[in-house]
Amino acid sequence: MARYDLILRGGTVVLPWGEASVDVAVRAGKIVTLGDLRTDEAAEVIDCAGLHVLPGLIDPHVHLRDPGDAAVETLATGTKGAVLGGLAAVFDMPNTQPSITSVEQLDWKRGYIRENAWCDVGMYVGGARSNVGELGTLEREPNVCAIKVFAGSSTGDLMIEDDETLERVMRNGGRRIAYHSEDEYRLQARKPMFEAGGPHRLHAEWRDVECAFLGTRRLMALARKTNRPAHILHVSTAEELDYMRDFRDVATVEVLLNHLTQWAPDAYDALGGYAVMNPPIRDRRHYEAAWAAVADGTVDTVGSDHAPHSRAAKERPWPATAAGLTGVQTLVPMMLDHVSAGRLSLARLVDLMAAGPARVYGAIGKGRIAAGYDADFTVVDMGRSRVIEQDWLVSPCGWSPFVGTRCQGWPVMTVVRGRAVMREDEVLGTPGGLPVRFDGTRA
Image 1 (cartoon, rainbow, N blue to C red):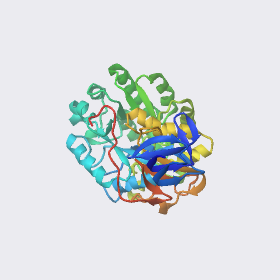
Image 2: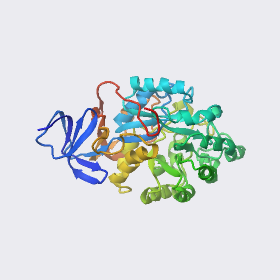
Image 3: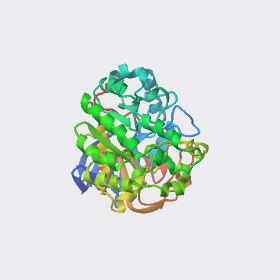
Image 4: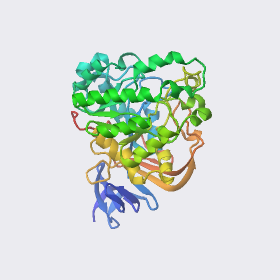
């Protein structure tokens, strides 16, 4: 008789090779074995009968705003929302105040994660004009998931919009770079065409399809020229998704939950400023193209782009409306509802939100239920129907575009490295998150 720290017993486990009714045993934070473990013992045995046990799901695209404005979000509140929503890890963007662009800031953030995070956290480093020559070193710093480059839609030092500097970035280092792809020159040229105070749906006209598509075409030309792998974040247009199929040698693709769930003009008519994000929510043609790209494998990862702002900032007249939507706590329930609606399988969800992020970013020990991997699990009840309610949300910004939405399927437990950190809406213990480890970085 073997003895373990934890056994998850009787669930339907989503394995890399298919679903199976097996028990999962954990020791010292790692998965030890899978199988019929009814005669074995553990310090804790959790009955998962009637539930699906998924690998710990990952949101690879969040802005936790820390350091920044604690009245909007912190790393502690953002990761608490993550585990309440069924996420075992998040990858946090660098455009904080100050931005994460140096070894010193990474060192600070690494310690801050260990003290405050409820789930594991990967760190992006911002590609800036001031650190282009250091990016090859910065990308190998411990716990860095990728360099993040804003090729449009940013301010100050973090925006790199010209091809010459973008090429210099690509020639410094070798790991995959994550890009916000909008053409800044086209954005600025079109801005005077729109008057202040217009309807929020104009956001998608200003930041039009060509704005995104042109940015992506430029990045793909440079990626192929330099042979530097790219990950294009929040791809939002049918044109880009079709184009990216010819660049699988150098590029991977992210699509956001919002672009799989909302479309114009309905979202703007219903939500006003609370539908404003970059790239924008587009019309039904692009929504349908996003789902087609999920179905044919074009899409590698799905994220939330959780980017909270205060209500006051979201309610300013357009185009002064702050761009960015919340989503870290609602990503999993909303995606489970899409599974229930038949838009994708549970296996494909796991591919997009566990195996995919681990593969694209090189996360060590994450993304699958297999012996030797981290004991990260998202346990879900596909039979549970529940409405996303305001009082369930923990982000201090206090809003979500999905409040009032009924979801079929719900996360009921989150396990991070063998420790249950959420069960039935209760966050357990104290923060125990760690920085995620990645291939190509120093230990």
